[in-house]
Amino acid sequence: MAPQTIPAVQQPQSTAPAVPVAPVAVPVPVPTPGTPATPPAPPPEEVRSVARIGMFRRYPVRCLCYIVAILGLITATAWAFGQDQTTWGLVALIAAGLVAARFLYWFLTVQYTSLVVTNRRVIAETGLFTREASEVPLKSITGIQIEQDVVQALFGVGDLIINCEKGSKQQMLVLGVIGPEPVVQQINAARG
Image: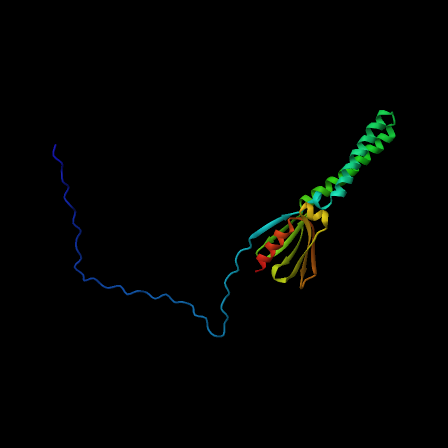
């Protein structure tokens, strides 16, 4: 079978002459000398670093005392119940529960504490059930100090003191920051 060819359809040609189209001007707003130009929008806030708090590193003796007290009270409870001293056993058990609850609350509170450095401010957030935040704008920071004793230096923690030039808080004190030197470097880099 031979291939068939389909005849091309011809469009009717216009007899009117082509009219050139002129470009359309778009008005550009020009600020007048009396009105200020709108400033560009500031860049969005971005987190530069988040520092954690080291409870065991900052307070090793206190943590050890809590652990020894809890283990001692549990041992006293077992001894009292073994000697048929039910009253002393219950007292030791309740005391162990209270000390353990206090230690757990302190541990969780410290675990939920952080120091956040953004490109605009430094924020210290803390709280277990309700969050509290203290913030300092980077432009109002006048100085940062690191305080460490020998034990803190060995464990790699330190206390940060951030001094401010204005506001209701002239200082922000953050205890037990893990790796304080890099945190200070991040704050200084964000300050510019």
